[in-house]
Length: 224
Image (cartoon, rainbow, N blue to C red; front, side):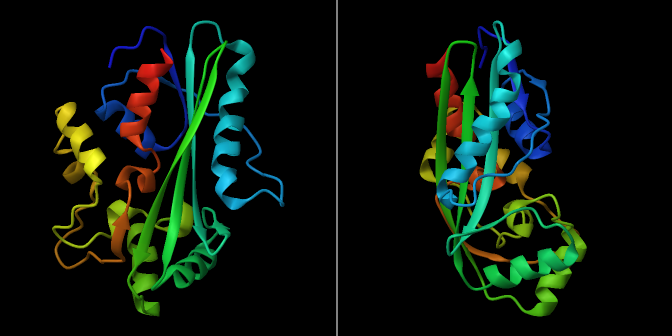
């Protein structure tokens, strides 16, 4: 997509940057320096939108003709937000909690210009298979998921030959000529070293990865 205004991606996430490039966007990366805290009384489902807008507004005062896009992803299990693990023990605890259960992943996006602000989010349900203690320690030691909310990356631990994308995502990828993007995002470890953690994804795979790129595309079109 050729935008009529310069685009700033307010994210240091390599996954978000990759998805934006694959969707055809040209952008400059700026990392917002913010305190990612939020009010303790804030409902968990509202938090990603609050943080995405907080990130975007870091650049508000300096905007002229640019558009800023910021995003935030949270993993929610039984109304508890599981952030990025602070250490290995924290990761072990998170994955133990997620084992055998269905949790919610919400990714929110804020698009901001000098005169306009538009925020939206997307919600996906992810079901984990039951994991043994050995499964969990193996996954953490092999895939190092310390930079990921909930201590896991969907692209690392899908069943073999599993299609993780929704119908809307598949249609979008076909539209932009990137139907091979699914395979490109999935981690392919050496034979015998992979592990399956996810049993089912109900919703958007890219939302779980950290950016519902099909919705970003549609909203940027309407924004400009």
